[in-house]
Image 1 (tube, one colour):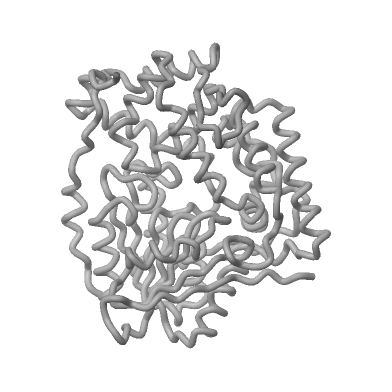
Image 2: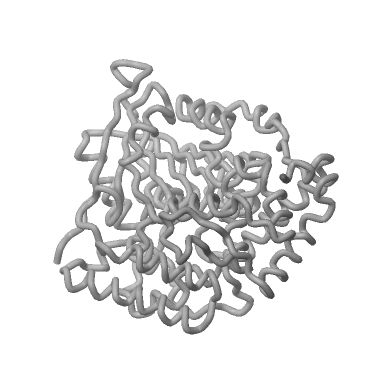
Length: 426
C-alpha cells in the first residue's frame, strides 16, 4: 500500500530575529484545501509576527504525495453541481457513482483509504513538529482545521502552548447544514430589517428572497458566464437550488454583504447582469478544492454520512456526503473535543457564520472548560481573522501571552455594513 505523506513549509518571522521559540502552526479548512501554494500570502499576514509560521499540506491536498485522484476532481465537481442544480434522483445516483469511481481508482493505485481521517492528520502534524525539532507550538485552526486543532490538543497537550479555534467546524452530532445556513441567512435578513439604509431599500428582504426562489423554480434565469466556464453558448441556468447555494456561499464573506440584498432584488426582478462574474468567481474557488480528499477524511470521521439523506433535507444537504460514504472504508476514530484541557484556548465566532452558529461555537468553548475564551464578532461570517482586523489583533495578542485575558473591546466597534441601495441598481 502507498502511504500518503504531508508537505510542510516553515516561514521565518519577519518581525524578530531570532524568532521566539514557539512557532505558530496554521491548520486550514476543507478537508481537501491546498495551503502551501498560499505560503507567501500567509507569511505577509502573520498570525504572530515574532514567531515562525508552519504550514502543512494535509494528506491528499496541495503538494502532499500522492495526489489521490488525478483528473477526477473535475468530474466530482460537475456531479456536485448537477445535484445542486436540480437534486433529482438521477443526479444523486450519478454523483454517488462518481465517488465510487474515485474510491475504486484510489484503491487500485494502492492507496489505503484507512490512512485518512482527522486522527491520522493529527499524527502527521505531530510527526512534522518532531521532525522540525519544535518543543511546543501555538496551534491556529480555521474551519475544519479547528477539528484537527482540538484533536491535537486532546491527544498531545504537552506540545501545545496555545490554541486558537477560528470558526468552529462542529463536532458530532452535527446539525443539518441547511438548518445552520438558514439560521445564518435569517440573522442577516433580520440585520437588514433593523438597518435604516437596508430596510429603506429592501423593506422585506426575507420575503423577496422567498419570492425569488419561487420564481426561479418556475422559470430559471439565463446567466451570461465567462468563456472559461465552458458552458454552451457561454450561458448557464440559474435555478432556485443554485441561487440558494450562491447566496449561502456569499454569507461566508463580509465583503459581499453590502451588495447581497441588491443581488437578491436584481434576480427577483429577472436581472442577471453581473451574476455571471460572481458565478465564475465561486467556480474558480470550488476548483481549488480536492473533493476526493474531502471524502477520504469525512467518510472516516463522520458516521452520519453513511446514512441516506435525513427527513427535512434540502439542496444544501444534498451537496453533502450523505449516502456516499457507505462501504467507503472502515469508520475511523472520531475527532475529539479537548474537554477539560488546560491549554489556553481562544474561540472566535462570526455572527453570520453559515457553518457554526455562535451559540454552537460557544457550546464547544463551554465543553473545553475554564481554559477557553469565546468571542463573538458582529457582522462577520466564516474565518474571523481573515475579515476582521480586530479578530486578527486579538488572536495575535493572545498568542503572545495566552495567560492574559485579551482586550476584546474592538469586537463591538466594527463599522456598519454600507449597503448598496435599490436606487443604485443600474
